[in-house]
Image: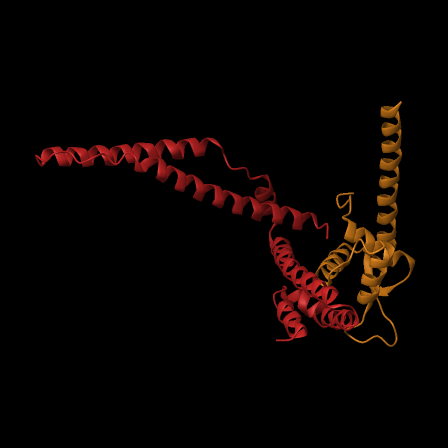
Amino acid sequence: MEQLPLTEPVLMVLLSLAEQPRHGYSIIKDVEQMSEGRVVLSTGTLYGALLRLLDRGWIERFEEEDASRDRRAYRLTPLGRRSLKQEFERMRHLTKLASVRISRRKA
Amino acid sequence: MTMLSLYRFLLRLYPGRLVVEFGEEMAGVLCELHRGSRTKGLAARWWFGLREVTGLLAGALREQFYERNRNLSGGTMRALRSFQFPRWTIFMMILMFCAVNTAIEKGRMASVLLAGRRAASSHWWTIPGVFLVVFAFLAVVGLIGYCVLHVFRVARTGRG
């Protein structure tokens, strides 16, 4: 897939939405918590990533009943979930390869 | 100007589509984050403000490039991505520059001799200086051009 590999902020946003639909503020806080404070998204970075993911069809707006215009939620689409799994498989393969190569070097 | 007014001002730098789509939402998130940062220490508040301002500025620049890329046709974009500055033109430019400088210098010397006056000291010493300035200028222009192309490529791949 052309868009892979994903950058860390995009990957974190997708992981945050993989669990449940979230709105912007909740995504920023969840990413900060997931990465133990290592990745702190600025609002500009988050919405740039959200726009790109919406354009690709990886996420969609999730209509909440009591949602106002300045507090809208997003969720993963089936395409987004598939892409995330593909990226995860790619990373798993890389990790496996790296551990084999590194252990071979030590031996 | 309060921080929130500054954030709202910076949001105006984003492309129209993004402001319409996310403007109010971004302002709302910024307000929430700003409220949350008030409970922290001064250093944390400063760090938060700095991160948001630089994030908004960088984001505005990135989104403007992204929007412009979206509007370019596929052929134009392919040509832009595959463009490479031909290196031999740099050599040709230097050669032409030397030739023009030599011609000017020769002409000046000849005019001084024909006028029956003693030739003034040559100005050849100025040429290395001119070379240096021209090279510096070309390097800066090249660097800016490279940065613009790089941003175009990054925005086109759309990796957030």
